[in-house]
Image (cartoon, rainbow, N blue to C red; front, side, top):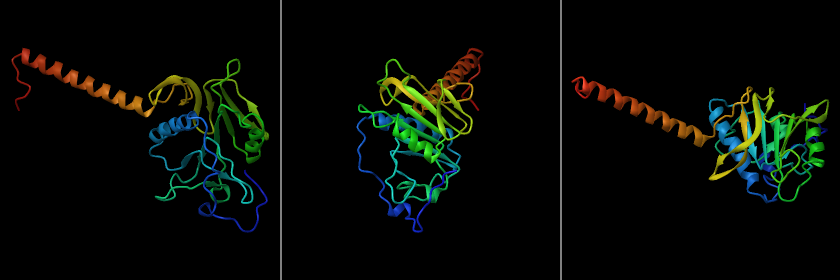
Length: 231
């Protein structure tokens, strides 16, 4: 459970800055968490107890600047407040620490492997995930799990996260017109959940198969002297 000694006055999310004004310097920092969120929006469409933030400030103390991960997932919170949506994620209002935090390393590493490990551990984030596409000899994807207050590096890809009910992994695929390694969600038996585009394509294939089946049946009936268009 996240615990800090907080002052008596606690500003609301609307009273806090919604950005640290630091622009992302790598397009992947938007696309990778965006893909993960888009899959969840279909996979968990009926659920209203989760929130996935992208480049959104997490406030843990009103006198400290927010931590702004590239993506994070919280469970057991309201998916939507109202039509204005969340300006930021304020822990003393949400009362739920994110279960999953993602950092996509830019051209210039920004403490992802050092200070941020300590910051997210102090916040008690269960899974801290780092993706670095520039790595050659070391894994591009690192999953760190919080165990007794310290992060332990996991060694499987994809990696199943039972507390969340999802696996996270990296594999080659197509998204946003680009073929490369992307991060995806997985089932417990390592089956990748499809992207929205893949689901649309699969739906189109099913429609085409059904149309072909109907045409073949109609042709068979006509060969038997039966008009399938007659009532």
